[in-house]
Length: 361
Ligand code: SAH
Image 1 (tube, rainbow, N blue to C red):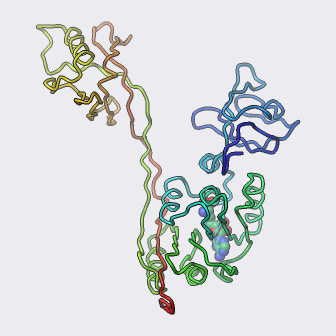
Image 2: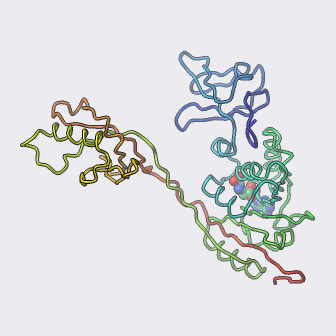
Image 3: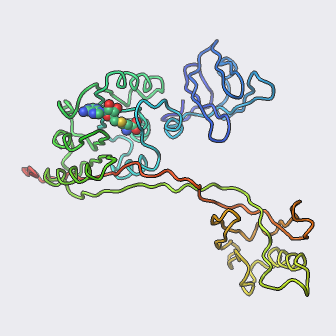
């Protein structure tokens, strides 16, 4: 299974991601003899076991099919059952980088929650690092332990049921990094400081409220942490799609020549002389090295779209515009989503550097 590595063939006991269509996925733990219903029809697990990850498989309903994807921490984050609020890609990737996690790192996390961050950490620190994750909600700790076992990463993760604010981490280790995602994180800082390596140990605390950030930052400084800094990760998603736009008239008034003729000329120009820098009106003029230089244009929805000159080589008349004899062309563009994921929380980081015999407080 693919949580920390790649495997080709789907085996019994694997967790596969079933891709049902755009924005529709689910996870499936495979077990001979089992049958799972999906909105595309039933899936017999025995039909899946032994197939290759990435394959398309028919469901039991007429014409229904799904794709079977290799599970990864990214796909797990999108498909896991939420036992708590979870962190997503933007925050997780930034945390991983800022904590300088790499194969072999030893990391402490609390709380475990739904295990979204834990799966990503486990893959980063594999094959010989370790994640110690602490959760004070007993059932959540147990469920997380089961997930890690099912996903073949339990050798990389130790789950401990513990209240770290009251009792600390209770481990006698010098760890590379600590990640906190719990209420009152400042109460965990003295405990974290005890287990962090003093030669650049990294800490990160995720907090939804700025008041928590203030308190955490103050306490980090008074505990001797340096490089105390706070970030908010906001993700801006774009959809890559093809839209059809009318060909530009190049500023000429229709009349002397038909709009269609102007467009045809422009298309010929784009196709034949992409290096012609005199065609200043043209959107997306090519550069000397033959690459396209993108300019911004507004699509009918009011969104910014970019135009690639190479696409202008493929003009065509749209059905709706044929009567007016206007030339349109399809372009590939990236359009920002109308609704964006917003504020999740603030990430406050600190680093622990202490000289021998220096307490830092
Ligand atoms: N980062 C996780 C979500 C964590 S939600 C994810 O992406 O999946 C916060 C978790 O912290 C909850 O499960 C909660 O039970 C746990 N928690 C809260 N206080 C705690 C404490 N004092 N000690 C340990 N865990 C705690």
